[in-house]
Image (cartoon, rainbow, N blue to C red; front, side, top):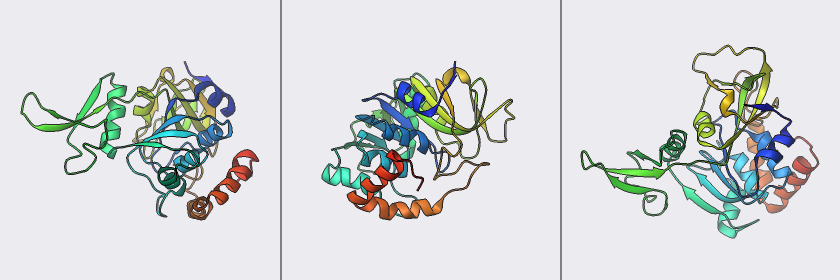
Length: 271
């Protein structure tokens, strides 16, 4: 059953060095507060799974937390490259990092297989790409009924899933609406889960298109208003577009990034 915790306690108890950690949220509800607390606590050697690595991933990579990244697309949305990601790949700074690249559909199906307690997923995908043959976790299989060649990817079962949501009730039932991404699948496929929320409510009134993640699959939930910043939480906050633009200059050099790390993460100045 879900337990209400403070953010520092939840991160300390649920995320351990060497874990495979899924941090999901698509366009909005990106769990930045939890990711930054992970950096603050110096938790390293992580295998980070994220459908769309963006600033969250860039910050964790630059801080040396990530040993391997499982992903399907990476960039600073609407701005350009992820410079800390690129520095890690090209120069091994601040540490060498392994990558496992998929399509959106491929990585999503890895979560779905994990959530379904299946060993792998089958999809029509990767045909005509260079990923088949370069990514070890993509195989070609023949359909036993039609003979069609299909792609297969193994189930992904992270040690812990971390997501941000709009609401939870006092029992830890989580309510998400807007673009729901793969948060539900990530939680259902993981051994533990941490959910930060904008608001704790007495009763959940389901919104059209919304989903409820039941408390029995949530390990811990945290009241963290603004926990998705600089992304937005539909119904609660707007996207901080200036932050994304500013990140281009902050992250371009190691010195600029280290200054941000010291001022924002370790000294706590919001920027």
